[in-house]
Image (cartoon, rainbow, N blue to C red; front, top):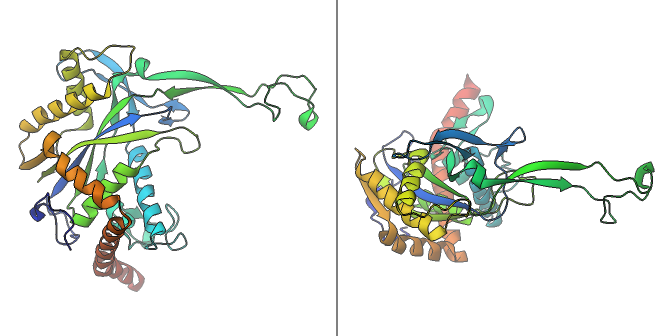
Length: 336
């Protein structure tokens, strides 16, 4: 069953291959913060000291969005859908606890269960970096934990002295809204169903970062996809090229946030220049060329019938792959 009319089937594998076959699809994504998310390790926001641009050799600190902070929320969205449409249960497959090893999430995004088996992820995501500098992209908040009466003053709760002001105050750095993280999500050897599965997960995911917070709202804007026979440029180089382009266009106006239209325009221009320098075979759907595909995917995934058909096809492919390759490993392991 074929879903897409805007793309030639030659870009897809007929089934999920056991070994790498040299087909890649790269999703060109701009991640835009819409609240105050936290991308942190050990209580501090992740950042890196890097060059501002490809041409601009000034050194700046940029916020970093590590790869797992991108791929994990997206695969969890896919798992929700699989459970919602009855293709997986929480009992048979629980993330990082008990992998069923035969559903689209396990086969496409991979798993590792000690001696029981493992599957390498076919989705590759690298660390993303903010276009703007660290100092322009974050702010410090003072957090408190008031009593139920809504004040910081005790009324004798838990033996405390009435009128005593609580010391439950803390400070935390948060990423500001309208901070942009260019990110390339790569899917190796895509079938049509796995392409749509990953595409849909990127479009649907709305929260990233620390899962214990009530913030973390992030919107993904896809500006194109690139089908190729190899890897393309890195997130950092694309970010630096966008910075250079925006500097030339005079659209960097710190401390004001970047304008989304300016970022999208610079991102398209920058990636087209970078792709022209690649030494691989590639077919690009960027800008106007990408619009028909994006509209077709949104139409498919926006209807219950369409999303069910995609999930069922992806599930059938995953189970066929598991029966053919993973079951043999498990049998051999038991025999050994």
